[in-house]
Amino acid sequence: MTHADIRTLDQSRAKHVWDVEEYCRRTGIHKAEEKRLIKVLGRYASSHELQMNIVRPQSRIR
Image (cartoon, rainbow, N blue to C red):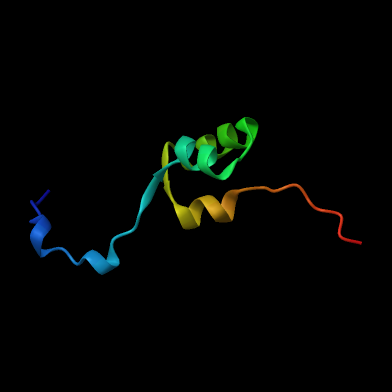
């Protein structure tokens, strides 16, 4: 493994990684769904991964 100097990294390509528990708490996701997300994604995930794996209850529009 090689050492990377943090000052030379491109900040525009960096991804924000969330703690799944914190993300669920902030967005109001139920505890059961939080546990499922932790099983699927692990303890940390990007916001895109979280959004694509959240199962929301269907709303009855009609």
